[in-house]
Length: 360
Image (cartoon, rainbow, N blue to C red; front, top):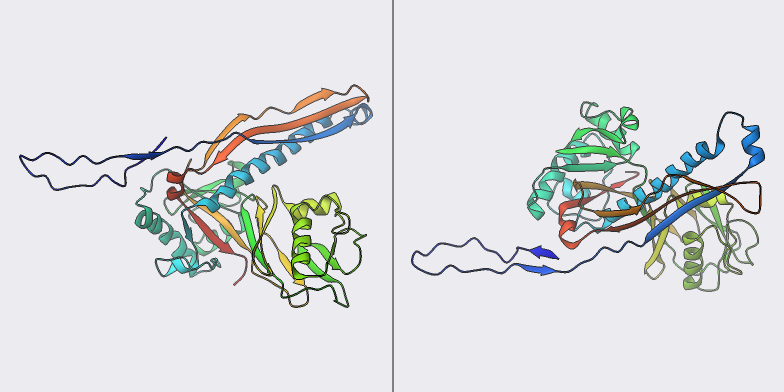
């Protein structure tokens, strides 16, 4: 049950008259624990023997557990997009966001760090207590550079669970699991193209071809604009899996580079325009070599606001679990979590979605 006090007014007292009693309204929201993820790998007894004193199961299990933790972190930080207010380039000099990300510079950094708290206080009447600012390493480096590095230490943050210091009334934390975003625009069908068309994401090339896809990363151009958009979406949302006649899967190593820690989410926002969200993937690089195509400068969604405004329930975050196999001489190593993540309506007012862009 979430109370709402918007209808409670501060009124003039009329002596001798009955007070006006306002009503507190409420709404019912629930958080569902439905995010269950795991990473599992097998290690043979022979590998254990050859590693000598080093226990490869524990060593590799620890690194895999870090991947699982990054997945959870990315899903939590993806909730940043549910903020009731954005903070972008428009907020640096006015009281309104414009949809254009901030390019960090000696001019914009001081504007950003001083005006973020102003927007949160002015727009949603929040107090500036118990605050966090979550950015990535590049943003932290830029802010430290332009503010002469006096507020926090980017290098030291790796030894302090990501904590880098204080700035703009908030504790600064560094995460590479923030969500990035870009738009891909096509102007027509490319089924008649005389040469292969390319889309490069995080250094991995996807090739749009006018024949049946048979090589890693090939996507069918189809026969219409809608066809090629749908085929690109299929490839980006699951780069690990081939779809006959539509897409031929990447190698696992390249698919991981494209998908990031959580995966890409694609939505067609208009005819020929696809919004690409790298959920928990950190900064995204994207270029295209498509006739008549274009991509927007990628942006990064950073969190500024109250700690705990995003509700997280972790029902199970088990230690690395090593289980002997029954059919092979070896061990399966499990790392998993079971959680629920949600931004409740009243909590969306408690933080800003701070939008940065990669280039001027």
